[in-house]
Image 1 (cartoon, rainbow, N blue to C red):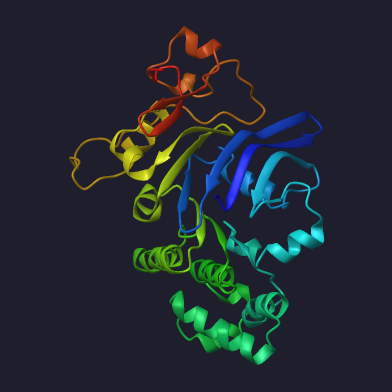
Image 2: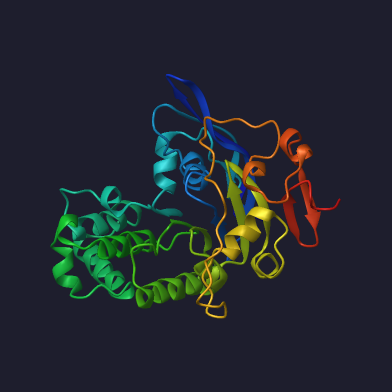
Length: 319
């Protein structure tokens, strides 16, 4: 049975210009010991999907649909009940390390608080666990870092502190939003290895939101590609990388630098830019940027079609 089962999740923001829909009916499942990668350009709705199902939207945000975690409905769950889940059985690594940490609290206090609140540890034991976790994420001089404030650390160090914080309680579900963006390649490899160990030994389910398709290839079992608030392709990572069905997925993969590609040629790009969430479409949202689009793509909204093990929302995928 899936640890997390999301069905028709929608996120809408009430603004002076009217309602803006950022997430438009997203559905997926994550099983214990499996990793789902969610990829797509900025503004595709990846982060808002996770914030919506965890009850972390701003006051003008409205979420609907269903998100079952261990059979419990997260959408509409009382704040106190959510607080017992978040940070304990569900952990989230925020994308922005500046706002993800409390600026007036020392690093040690923030890490120890997780174990004191969710595990009932005494402060000394909590700090010992925090120090060990800083070693795991390869932060030098952990004893000194525990006494420092977030502004005294580099962006990469703050990112690793947030990863350490998310791992402290050994969560059943880890949601990591761009966890390796500010890290150098050697530390990235360490973090990815840690995620792989969590999957294999602790049976932790992981949702990895990232732009880095190399990271996705290294750790993810399944991939969901988002565009304009919808999942446009979903399937096993190996199959999606080998033979993507959706033109947008093919475009993303073509834009990824490869060592086996000629160095003197231009890097392929996807023309245009992602549409703003205020823009509505009667047809396919990717049609204005798609080289294969025709008149039907501009007027007919594509439903999900199967191509082997992959599901893609594209009229060009054969039924």
